[in-house]
Image (tube, rainbow, N blue to C red; front, side):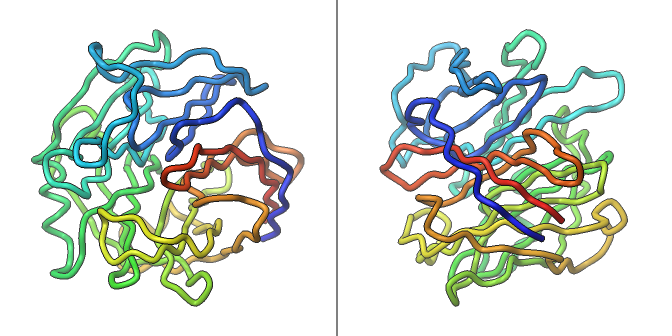
Length: 291
């Protein structure tokens, strides 16, 4: 895998950036501590800010009460128009156990759901020393793939469930052991995910951060992008090992939080990645990835 830095997109300062998706030539960006979704054109002009709650303002949420919106993906189900699913990390019980469905046709919020039953079902699959901290989300066929981020003391994991979980509760959950390769000789944790169906590949972002739990932030030592091949054939496996991973140099400031496909050029792919360095405005970059 070859990863080339194209440049920073300058759409104005993002108060926060933790997840990114492209749909119908529009770029959607969510932040972990804000109550709206940025909506940009593919030329990176701000079109709108979509409120997640009718009574929400545009102020940043304080850490104790933020929903910690960390994972987002366009999802589809039989007989339904594609929707944008945005979920909290679950890293703080109750407060961060939320999910939102955005109607991509009307740009209206269909549902704001408190999902304690689902999140608690996932927590049952954690090891005794692990914490729930969902940072990546992608749809693979009829399944949702959730990437759970570890820290310097604990490992990462991947949880598989039915896509129907986005519309009603399901207790089907399968755990896969997996972790990105170390970055700067430090354990790396998943930070984002994107599934490219045409090549059956799950791309991920990862970061090495000096923190010992899912709640507190720490110094970021570096970030990376990697991938798993033949994902749809491996959903019932018990272990995934990354097929490729490339660490970033200092060209990208902050912690790389997520990625999404912007366009394809021959056998090369242009991805958008968003970065967030707690307390500093987020940024958006373009990367060219060749497998």
